[in-house]
Length: 525
Image (cartoon, rainbow, N blue to C red; front, side):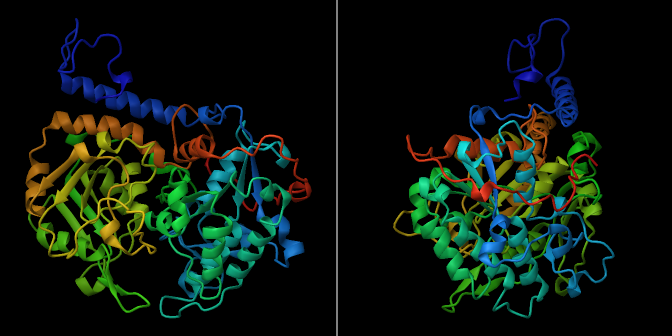
């Protein structure tokens, strides 16, 4: 169904029968698409400063940097302690060999894992923010600088040098341990605290077990925002608080590092103006990863390669590329990738090493109709907020022996839970799309189905996509247009556990001073 704004008061039936003047459904949909896209872009500049679900609630930002002195941690500054590679949005240490070719790192605003930073900026600029920890209903734990410092150190060692010890990981744990000793935490055993873990796995050899223990035991009552399906399964205790867990999108890239939201401000291109029919560019190697117990786990990269082999050379309007040099591929700069996606009808949404991908955010941003194919399936961030049924297509390929030799488990049994992100037999859709799932035998049958879709139906998808795409935008200004940040805040407020009535007021020591901004707000550029 098209959004209500498209129909106004003149609609008399879903088939497009209108009172005078008479319009065809095709014209109506195109007008609707233009209207919704224009209104949403216009809304970017407006700021209501509120989220409906947060009415009457106050949120305090608890920066663990306030514990630096007492916990023996150094100060942390995003602007100087890490460097963001503009090619992939990954953090490195300033002297890392991966970014020596870059004169100046990209702003934190377009780092793939910078969701927590964007959320902090949004909360602080909203009407729901409070600097009084005692009066706060919700405590947002801002650990992002130390988290990125740890992640930068992990990446900076390079792919062939396994990290066995990380100062960043140790500092992060010290901050957490100081946090859980506060009276504010003890008031409700952390049930009104919110953590945002923007990376699939804590891989520091000395801190990972301590991190998992703290998140799974000490912080088991807290709310956990993550970016990967496997993260919601990492702790058995999470099953009992499943409604409080939330999978958020990665931060999308930008063709201009000084303008993080530039891609969302571009209009959605009409179907007739698009030159490419089907698009995918991704890494397809390696196929397997060996776990500690020597068992092998199949990732989604073999799936990607199969799609490229089966469909890649069937037609000039199909652009499916494996970027791996071993397979004859090459790296494509993101501005070119974004331009191609904006000019493509369908973009394949597929898993890789894990179920989540930054490309999900970028496909929606580009206004390319997402096509989720499986098994296994890519993660669907913000499953309750995004109307995936209306904006995307879903295919169940029944003959999947070429890339997936297991059976997909379409739910997580309570007594059998996966504890690792690389378990693709649990990579099922995160939103209820049963009624929209299209079952076909092969990839070729899927392509045939896509070729047969009428333009009127595609225009309906674009109209929905023009609305849903902004739910992947990490905008700081709250408005009537729902975005990733407003959707996350809405979940925080709707699902948090209130502190017990009559509980003693917590001390204000930890709230005495919030660290200064590490970097200016990039959103309005």
